[in-house]
Amino acid sequence: MKIWKGTAASGGAAWGYATHLRGDPEGAIPVRRTVTDPEMEIARFWEAHGKALAELESLYRLAREDMGEEESSIFLTHKAMLADEELQNDVVQRIREKKINAEYAVYEAAQVYQTLFASIEDDYLRQRAADLQDVSQRLCRKLENSSEQALHKRKDAIIIAQDLLPSQTIQLNKENVNAFLTQAGSPNSHAAILARTREIPAIVAMGYEIASIPEGTPLIVDGDTGTVYANPDRDILAWFYKKTEQADEQRALLSQALATENRTLDGRKVEVKANIGTLQDLEEALANGCDGVGLTRSEFLYMHSTQWPDEEQQFTYYRSILSTMKGRRVIIRTCDLGMDKKVDYLKGAQEENPALGFRGIRVSLAYPDTFLTQLRALLRASAYGSLSIMFPMIVSPEEVDRVLELAREAAEQLRAEGIAMGDDVQYGVMIETPAAAVLSDILAKKVDFFSIGTNDLVQYTLCADRVNPEVAQLYDPCHPAVLRLIEHVIENIHREGKVCGICGDAATIPEFAVRAIKMGIDSLSVPPRKIPKLRHLVQNTDSNKGEYYGKSGNPQPNRPHTLKADCNMG
Image 1: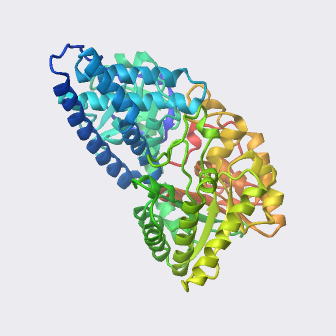
Image 2: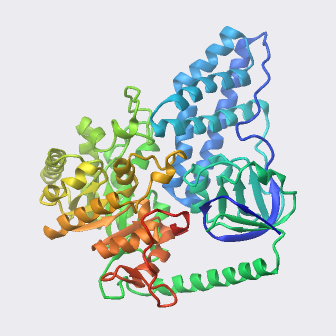
């Protein structure tokens, strides 16, 4: 038996046979050829471009059905890159002026942009280099009439690769692929995030030595500790079978949790809600016993449109959500465009740091007419359920005053037109900037509820991009600075008699969730498939002591603040 170690990226245990995915994820450099008819080559480019767009649309739909809106949005980003006019014009110009083949023109143009992205100091933009690489490879494959290497050559495969692109990970056949191991990569890469969502055990950054594992070698993968056992002995096999039994028992406990009210061991109610992006997510949320919707990402409606969606289109969508939830409270976040959520009809200057730029409520307030359209649609839909409207990326009380003024204006317009609205609409603020957290005592006097968005709050507090492998270890929701901010927010909000929830990814981390419960959080909102595990955690936590008791009934001690990969619920 031989043991290999790497970085845990997606939990769980799996067994199977080593199956190598050969080739460099950066792809082969196309051969440069001189063409005699550049216009015919340009026509080839546009034909391949259309096929690549159609393929990305199919991948997006596949990902959305399998994992939900947020995880699948990576393919909307890829479509936007492929549709970028500057990139398209660059390729066409290279073909026409240099008289080179389309494949090499795509490669050259993409290299320029990848180099530009990689050299930018902003961590988020540096990550876009990998996305552009994925997009350009797809386009070259269409030009060459080739296809991606299959990732499921055999039954019970453990994929071994140098690295995996997002588009490769989404196409892993779960019926055949039991786990994947990569030489490079980060636990916060797109591929790792997709693996966790799809519940495929994964270990990354294992080093180039794993390429020497012979094809077909029996392997056991421990995705919780980042350990791989080649040709496992009897002790390891016994451990694996025991872990499998425990997983079956855990599933039974989760099923039991669905039929039990969400109260802690000391009797405090903590609601478990769902984060949704599409109507399809609602069915899974209800099946998993959600107490309501803690976050509806309305911007995906905008991202699927070629122009600002009109009032009727939005009203129909919001009404469907509220009607489906049958009286459970639904929080809908107003449009949060910007950064990675871009639309062609919102043109703006190139931003050096989009994470700190024109996004969220800043976009809405810059386009008050379109914001009023959304507010009118939301208020009309409120007649069909229990609606809460939440505003993103707030940094000042003045912004809250302005959005509430526009909400009152929208309501007055609808009353004047004799259009029905609900009588219990609530307004809230998303706490995702340190500024909003520090000013939470002032903001608590202005709105009805709050939700802490840990994804941005953690990265802004610690100045660490969670998808940048060079600083990923610094991105820690359990960092003392983050926990102090959150405790400060909860105390300020409760002092005003208001409620506060958490809707960021940190709510899926047991260590963090227990700490939040101890601080007095009122609700936790997670992707639909994470709800059963979170319900079980709530029901087995003593909020007075801040301890999680688990299956054995013995308290599990809180660990140091450093976030470990095996904390993730999934």
